Length: 108
Image (cartoon, rainbow, N blue to C red):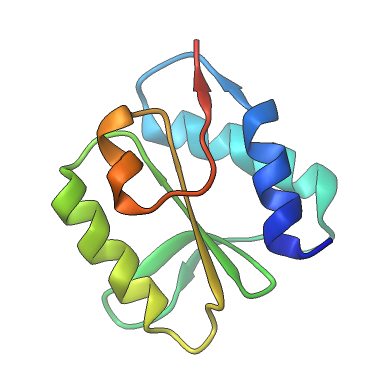
């Protein structure tokens, strides 16, 4: 199983109550650290692009707000980094589904 596959299996296990992005990041961080030995948070990929998590070569961005267009632009910047081979958007918002996310978090 790849790191990407393992991360995407974890996402549905995450239950989130709330609307604050930082709290979702904290919950996801705990889940990732319980599963993977190396989890980096707030990783600068370029001067202007800081991804929420990097697990190996998988970048993980958490979004609750922002427009789908803004999220897509941000994900494209991350995808340009040579450090990123896969990109996962973790969101509780249906409006972000068209941004190309593979994992979904169940909103409670």
